[in-house]
Each structure stands twice: as structure tokens, then as C-alpha cells.
Length: 77
Image (spheres, rainbow, N blue to C red):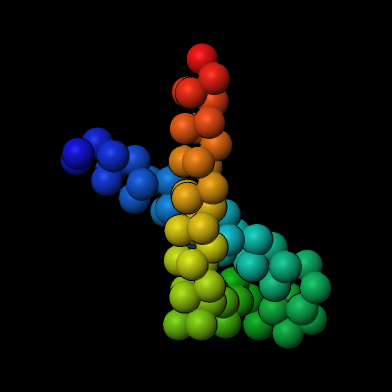
């Protein structure tokens, strides 16, 4: 049971990491203010409660989808 919970935490955390890295790259590439004000300003700009909520929901949805795909592959084997 603990290993399933740990795997879920790691997988959701990885999806959240990918979400924030994508936001940071977009901030660095497309926002003129981000290039002028620096990395700390960009980090402050992307770490908001709204972005965190979106990241957690996306992480949970991604985890559920991956688990369903894994179950389907296990059943076929």
C-alpha cells in the first residue's frame, strides 16, 4: 500500500515539475519583462496559487490516465 502511494506522489510530483518547467521556459522565451527583470522575477511570476492548482489537477489527471493504461497492458499480458 505504501509503495502505491509513494509511486503516486512521485508521478504527480514529476508532472508538476514538468508543468512548472514549461511555464518557466515560456516566461523566459516569450515575455519581454521576464528577460529584463531576471530569473527571480520570473519564478515569482509563475509560482501562484492558481498555477499550483492547475498543476495539481493536471498531475492527478495524468496519474489516473497512466494507471489506467498500465492496468490495460497488464491485463493483456
